[in-house]
Length: 124
Image (tube, rainbow, N blue to C red; front, side):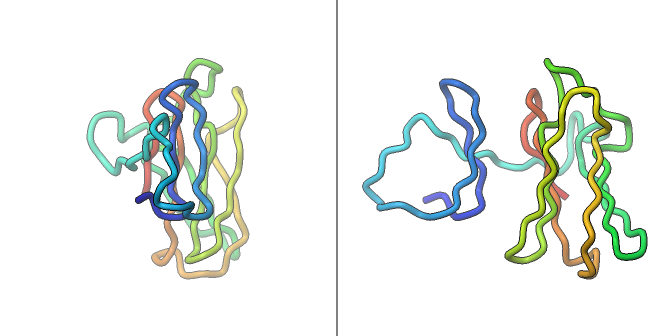
């Protein structure tokens, strides 16, 4: 069973979906696979989200090394998760892989994730 808030990728078309509500146990979603976030390893320098605080703002930058933002290889979105509230910024080719959200929660209690259309889901 895939829990709410999990991301799923269609094996056929590559679309990424977020599961918001658990359906009946008999539902057949064979063409969807749950995305497992990566935290380190090969490619982490360009993918692991980095959180910083600037006053009331939380800044999320993708990677220690700037990630490409081209149609063929890009960060599609960045999310900040504060318990049951999720903030999301959708990115386009040419944009800086960065998001800023006004959140007062202690930065150590926040989770962030981003999705690269080539290398998948990354989390910090």
